[in-house]
Image (cartoon, rainbow, N blue to C red; front, top):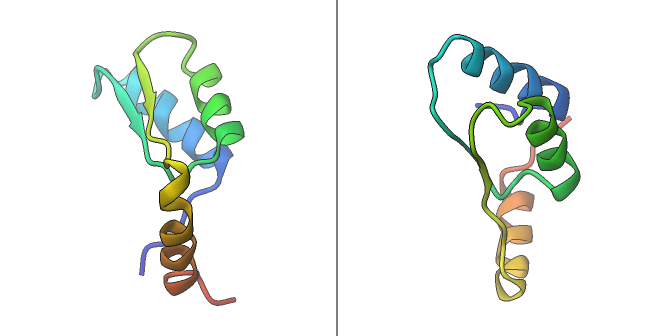
Length: 74
């Protein structure tokens, strides 16, 4: 099972991809909260465009059910 990555890992991965010229833009999943997305955006220093998918209010209940169903059991 894939585990979610932490904000610090996401920043490091994004910067590594950009420095290797492996990407021309970065799109963050809606699973990233606004704070974590902002940290990734700050880390890339404008070197590539960064998009962030956000959930509309009517989808939050479904997103919460999805998260609960696939939460990593500790």
